[in-house]
Amino acid sequence: MEILIAEDEAMDQEFLGAALRQLGHEPLITANGQLAWDLLRLRPELPLLITDWKMPIMDGLELCRRIRQQPRPGSYMYIVVITARNSKRELLKAMAVGADDFLSKPIDTEILAARLHVAERILKLDARVRLLTQLLPVCPICGRIRARDGSWYALVEHPRKSAGTADESSPASMCPSCFLDLAEPEPGPLQG
Image (tube, rainbow, N blue to C red):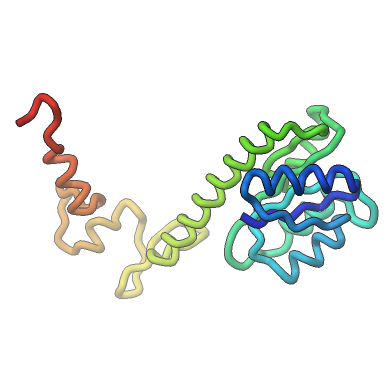
C-alpha cells in the first residue's frame, strides 16, 4: 500500500521509509504538512498518512484538520500522528482534529506494523461499505434504502421489499449457498 509520510527530520524520514518498505509498503515522503497537502490534492486516493506533529510551514494537526474538512472522493484516509509528545492531553488533541491513531517517538517497528495492520483492516472495511452502498442505494442521513420503484423504506423491511414475497420466517437475508451450508453441514469425522 502507498503510505504518505509528512516528516521534517531526515533521520525519521529514513527510518520510516525503510520500515515501511520492509513491511511491504511504498512510502511517499514529504518534508512538511504543506508538501503533503499539495501531494494529496494531486493524489486524493492515497489511503494512509503518517504525519509528524511538529513541522515547519504546516504542522501535522493542521494537516489532519484540512484533510477532515475537505470531502474526499472515494476512500477514507487513515491518519497516524507521530510525536515525541506522549501525554493523554496531546493524544486527545490529535484525535480531536481527526487523527485515527497516535504513536510516540521513538517508533517501535513492531508497534508500527501492528498499527498498520489495524489501519489496513479499517480501510478494507471502508472499501467494502462503499461498495455495498453503491450496490444498495442507502440514504446517508437516515439509512433508508431506495427500492426499484423509487420508494424509500427502512433496512429492516429490505428482505420483504426486495423479494416481494418473502415472509417473516424466510431466510431472505442469507444467500442460498450460505443457507444450504448452515442447513446441511459438510460431513465431519462423526458423520458418514
